[in-house]
Length: 143
Image 1 (cartoon, rainbow, N blue to C red):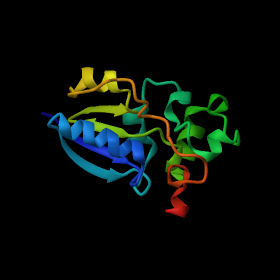
Image 2 (cartoon, rainbow, N blue to C red):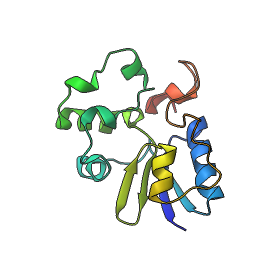
Image 3 (cartoon, helix red, strand yellow):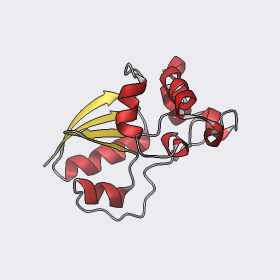
């Protein structure tokens, strides 16, 4: 089984469910706090390269939901600068297995990538199930 470096937002309901799926499949997790990690443009691009800028963003982030930030209007550089300043904007989880990096948790794709067990594939494990104002929608300053 794989050694997965798992960048999460501690306390996130979906990240907890994602970690359980990975551990149930026998993977070893090394969990890191996505919000306190010292990100650089280069480090983020290891995960994001090859994806459209709009796919880089956490659709549950308050600034995205409110329309304050429109990812479709951002350049790669401006998007990276925003994410470095406020990592809650980064789509999560970020995962690394050896030299391969992954963004988000589309269950069927993660299963194809490293394998999962006992998955139904029906539950949405990407979008925050909580309403605005709860811990899934907090910024680094509120942590």
